[in-house]
Image 1: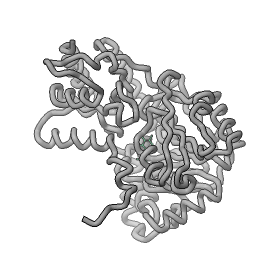
Image 2 (image 1 turned 60 degrees about the horizontal axis):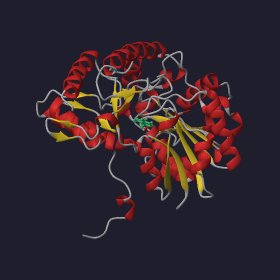
Image 3 (image 1 turned 90 degrees about the vertical axis):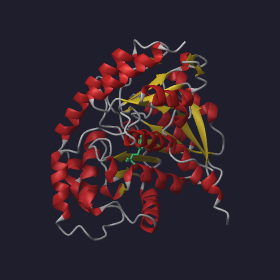
Length: 398
Ligand SMILES: Cc1ncc(COP(=O)(O)O)c(C=O)c1O
């Protein structure tokens, strides 16, 4: 066969999507799988968003929009960001994209050149690394396990070279649930400024933080790095619209222009209907929905923590944000379940699916073996059933 471009071989398909698909396939075959691998809320979007989106369908939203998104949505996003960050945000610096994922990809394409190194705190959401590879860059994983899953200046120093071009920060973090405090972010921002590197902040889970922790946006603590900072956010997780594919980016004018250029030749823009449907939500009309989601998630988080804490061979750090536990299963590795050796977390995840009908995502999907990710954004009855099954499985691990 005629050869494919080499860049295709530099990445594998998304492992989180892979785990999701595997669980779906088994469910379709009639197995009652508890899907802790989900990366999305179980609920429907807010009724106001559904109503506004159906309304948008019937009102001449069938045409192309501006490349960067409709002005009403960009204005609403900018106004909201201004309030939340205490920094005046100009809507000309906002680009609406097909999900945060595409916003991140456009960012990487805009700033990373062949051979450039990009520091990515590990564990990481896999697409961050794959996107750097697709752009011809070299992702450099910075293991944060020993620092409560947070990056420090010292870790950055240790991994930086004169090819370092950018740092990718993700707070609240997928998969660890860690939320960066202001002091850490300030330190990272100062370091980026000293080193003259780009700073990309993925804040997709910003609305999903449990008090007393609170989300701190890099822009709010480090406005002095605004020209080198790219902030990426999404409606996916906050309004339960992962399938609608809509996110946004805030960046300096040169980056915005670069992104618009590339977006105009690729996806053109995010869906017109969805853009119209989310204007009011972006302006704050659905804050009650967000609050309700947090209450439900807080209850699920306690439930999982309580039960998980009693399962042998598993440990975890209590997550402050997003909706994941990143479970340390290193103590189970090397042991056996019904005569089969658990050599790594990938094998463990397969065994959990096979023997306990529970889907989790192994840590290797996030660049770190010895852990698995468990989402608690699923129905409470599924959580309880899944925990019973996990307990049963690990009772049999020796
Ligand atoms: C850390 C992180 N960034 C970005 C995304 C992409 O979100 P979106 O659905 O807006 O593309 C995800 C989705 O799982 C994520 O976990």
